[in-house]
Length: 50
Image 1: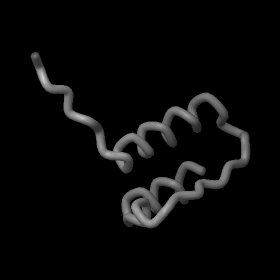
Image 2: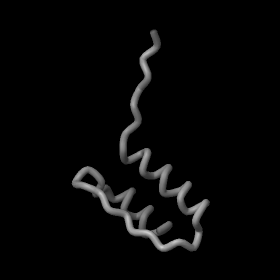
Image 3: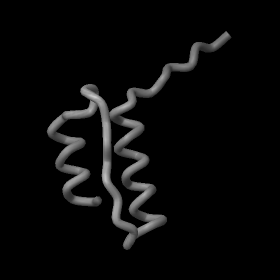
Image 4: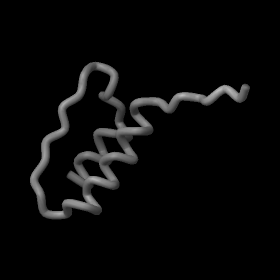
């Protein structure tokens, strides 16, 4: 049986943010995450897209 690799929460968050902004371009949003999320790349993406 082939093993399925689980995705990292940060990578999944990046995809979710991009899809969210495509679907709801004008909706104000706030991202709340636990201590796993504070990475420079994710913070910059949130500032840029949200």
